[in-house]
Length: 178
Image (cartoon, rainbow, N blue to C red; front, side):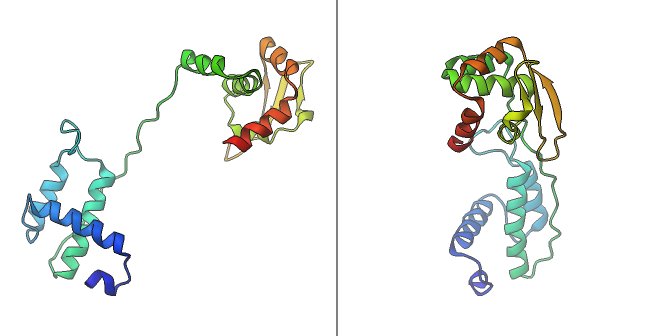
């Protein structure tokens, strides 16, 4: 009832109750040291060989902190650093398989993106005038803290871009679809 008076949403209150009930099954909620030790050493329910993520532990501590405040239990909430997940980076072979499965128009765009490593938005913002097909160079305007750059394209990519109906139209189409 205390959470409703503070203006919290019903979904938040239900989630908080669910997590606190789950904690109460394993430890006494009126003993903060036991709760902290349990949460810090808890294992993932679906993957018992893996520990809980720090983000999930912080959420549990946040809900427990609210419980302690409403019951006037002294509790110093531990702060755990968020560890971002390791990104899955495809191999060159996987990228080439994706490009080979694309249509001719999209294969051109994907090949340019794979060759020079720019983002799709950077390629989208590149005007046709900055693509020099004779010299095989493309000038990319950097976005989101990326610097501008001039890149040399492979000859097969240049041939691919000249055989498509229009590189700029394909880039615009790919942006709209994503």
